[in-house]
Image 1 (tube, helix red, strand yellow):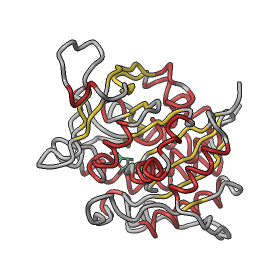
Image 2: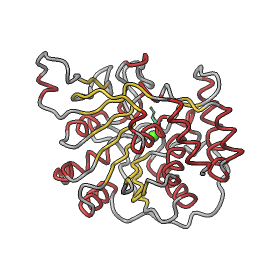
Image 3: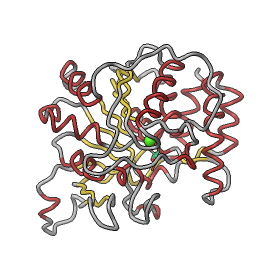
Image 4: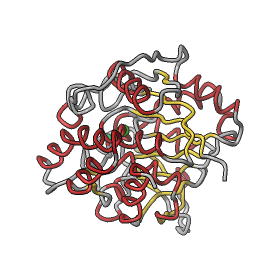
Length: 320
Ligand code: BDR
Ligand code: CA
């Protein structure tokens, strides 16, 4: 089987970093680029973090700076209480960062790379969808040339999932709902890995400690970077552990059989108190719904084999 060629569109971010280590280590993944976006922090910080992650775990992968703000609203404030002041859990950083960003804008890099590898690129988007929307705006034809778009975002009411930044909205959708609605409406294959499954997928303290002890540098990094995140989750009412949000989307790329999905077009509310709310019209629903019916179907994750997804992470980091 040929490898999954991934452009990782990300706002690192602690769980983004954990997902990055997985991709850097998985034998069936070829990272072809990392595009940064505002989100968990400002664009300067998320880009610095992407450079650090690439230097430490994937030295030859280009890093490209992306959007500093949503399409139609001001940039949000960094969420330091979740990801730390540096958005990587305020850990001590090992090694020097000798990397520089690629000179292009992220959306231009996405267009160039997709055109250079027609039918081969998976866009794995785990932050606000702004870079993808800008790429579509500049070159709508890339939609027909991308292999697949896999998104971490949204909440569809399965397993009791509501929003996590408002009662209606998940963070990546809330950060740029206009961009998300554009991405879900474009004629490309989209799969959405939302809170319905990521809130089920908990890396416990014991699981993380086992990686620390058995998975070398990668395991120690995952442990170190998750300490801050775990304290936030504890404050938020979780007993011990962290949600594997962004890793879940990476796992979906290589192991979609671990997930069950529902098909149908998805809209994102862009205004009002429910901005960022994701609503799917299931393909089994017969009622006419013109705001959905003109749009392509997306696959939304509604169930997950948690054990298999966590085992995949451990096996990938620990190795044979
Ligand atoms: C998403 O929001 C961000 O804070 C995380 O990195 C993840 O992508 C979860 O709602
Ligand atoms: Ca993220």
